[in-house]
Length: 188
Image 1: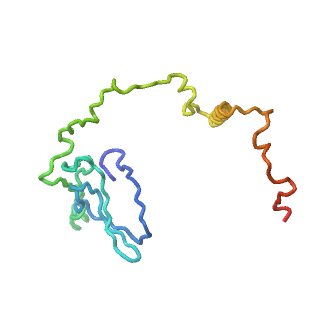
Image 2: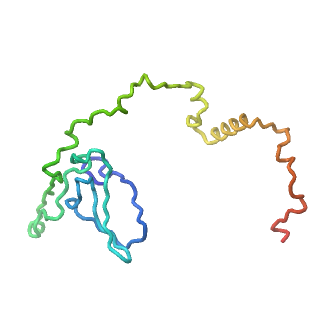
Image 3: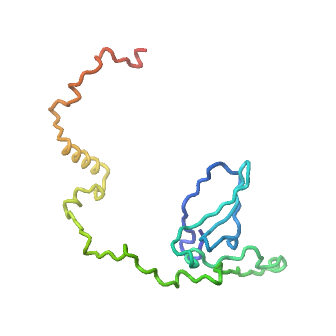
């Protein structure tokens, strides 16, 4: 989504089509349904059909114009210069319009929503347990090197399993196939 201020382009979520397409064409912003918070509309050409595309942003307060999503839009459907003006070396200034319907108020100017019962939770009513240094020292997120993390994981696993190198493992006592019954690819 392009804007006039840095970083000029904002990343949007991905769209994965259910089947291959041959082409995609987007309409001008003025064709978007801003009441439904639709920020892009277009058509997708598939081998068997032309399918409409609609991209929307989920918002709670759709009764307001989402001015954070819909800045003034450039008028791309009308030329800023005639051909004669352009050949004469003139530069035209782009024209911008607002997509805001007259009957909608701006979200940025709206009163904040009234707090719900869930929002009124007193912080003192929530018990917070902090393990302090013990938790921080044992956390792998604070280790910088890959080798250091690997050694810490092995130490923690060994402590939980209580494995001793000189002890016999339980699976060593299981009965199974005799060693001479194993077939290797080299034997075939």
